[in-house]
Length: 295
Ligand SMILES: [Zn+2]
Image (cartoon, rainbow, N blue to C red; front, side, top):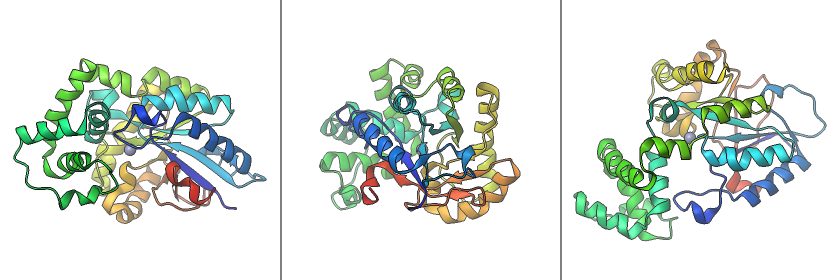
């Protein structure tokens, strides 16, 4: 048996959140119980601890509200600690990354309706072939919509369309942020109850190849936000999209900069076992929805 890190995003009922792939609260509880039985669940700061069982870290990306109302409550009940990561732009400057707007709109509005609206607003070519990229989506309109949002529209048009929808659903972007993300007060409470908080990003931008620039724009401002608002100097980092297309380059180039700025380690989206000790810097993670392969 080797050490593992499990990666979680949304922890909520599947029917209430069809725009993405959440794990249900019940399945989440079962997984944590399984992990607790087979591993020693630790905080990142306890990596060098000598344990009888292999070690496991429970990690969360994006700091959405369900992680506070559902996951954190379950972790407390089961008396284990989790590692949560902060995205500062929504809390600090009211900017929501596009993919969260997409998940929200697709969870609330019928796909055919969205597709018809997009066609009325924009010049959309035939997407039959291109949308095959999303062939795992059973609904063909969902495939088209995702393709349009993620590949066809420029960020500004995309944002304008999606924000208008979200404003209709929630009243305003500010009230959406309040409902959708863990608040500063809640993050402080989590910290005080032993949860580890790390840096995820500022705006959830992909790594484009300039490590110092990436550190300055996507990492440092989040670190400062956490120091000022949460009273924490973060030591752990989880890159957005795992670094995306440039992940290998990112890991090599960013590591010395992170180390120089006091970070002790960071987490990937490479699906594999890992060795949890401080001699390593990058740690692999299994997605919770694909954990069956090792259970
Ligand atoms: Zn993320």
